[in-house]
Length: 531
Image 1 (cartoon, helix red, strand yellow):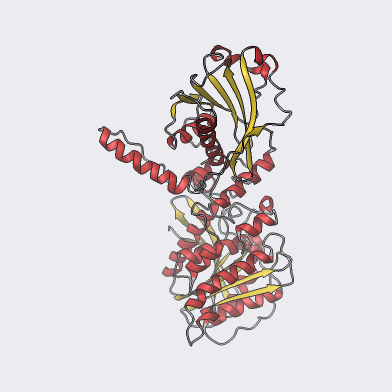
Image 2 (cartoon, rainbow, N blue to C red; image 1 turned 120 degrees about the vertical axis):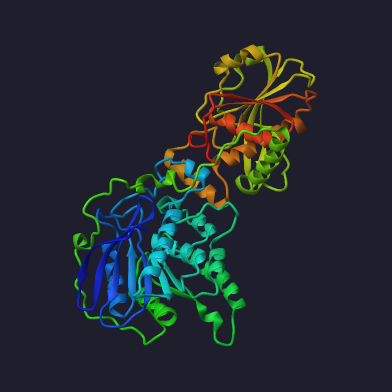
């Protein structure tokens, strides 16, 4: 951990130590450790996780009153800066507005870094004789509340948790359309198609108090009420004559996104009951607020800090291997296919809906124009999955009896494929049936903010825009086989840049594709489509 204490502030009821440690080499975490002065230890201890409070000297000064209250009532309290608003800042808004879509492919979320930092903070508390390792509570508001959920779920050293204004279901977040205002640290990538009540089940039977505001626009009450009701069912399974069911609670105040006096009081009462396990605490006399510069830990940025690029380091790169035998590769191929189906494309619909093919009524595309002198032309649409219609323009050799080989040309967003933009296809007209296919979100342009919101909310259902387009391409292949009545055994998929990669993935799942043509493909998913 390479812990350093860079200074100490002595106050009447407690001392404040300025602490910095490295949760990984070069990943610096700054915070303040409050230690009571007038009671013998080891003390009940609180790990306080800050929310989004920007400031060049860290977020901790904005929440110092919480730490001071606990320390004045006999608790140790370690309050941590966030990665984003720490003294050594890093990035939270990678997919929110910085177009770092490779985070989705990596499975990276800043919540992962924040959880890791909190776990390492618990490791640090294990080394402090003043802290009672069996009595550690975690709490925080907003982003700090979200991390409270996750840390309590993955680390059983947390004896009690009280997340504030941070409880949601994905359905509630979607219904209220709040993604644009939420930080990337709030959510997990939902590969396994679960929801926050499952996180509560992982915390059970340890005490969990959910606190929220009925007027909170970011975490509306229908979301945190549903989480409470579903998590309580699990807690009820642990119920016993000594009151096991009371280990979960809900505080619902008529406020917005804030620590109201009631919410603060109830969170503190919860920690008194389950962590302190002693006489109820009382509000101390007014405590003078510390200046941010007095609570600051570092005088300068460490030259070896990796905080700003931890998103590129936290998840190790998958190793590449040269396979020496065909049998070994065949076995590995089956493993990869199974992993792709289990993780990347787990959301794929189990049942294929009817295509319900119809003539496309869209006016975009300018019609066939002079193409009819080369080919027979049709413009159609069909159903990819319930509620999703996709478009295909079919350019068949004149008089084709189903014998021509087929080229499935997958359109990129922004591509112009009007009749006067067909120069690159002219050499194959008359010899190939060309199906120009428009996966979802490629026919019309989408603004950058709208695209980010679609991409982020798609991850709530285990999807990405690219993975949905893979499904669309796969459905286009199935549509060709089922409805074009082709006699040709040869279907080739062609795509430029990232669309070629998506065609390659689709080909894995349908052996009717005999060839994939990649035009200027990206080197990896670091640059290419997010899956």
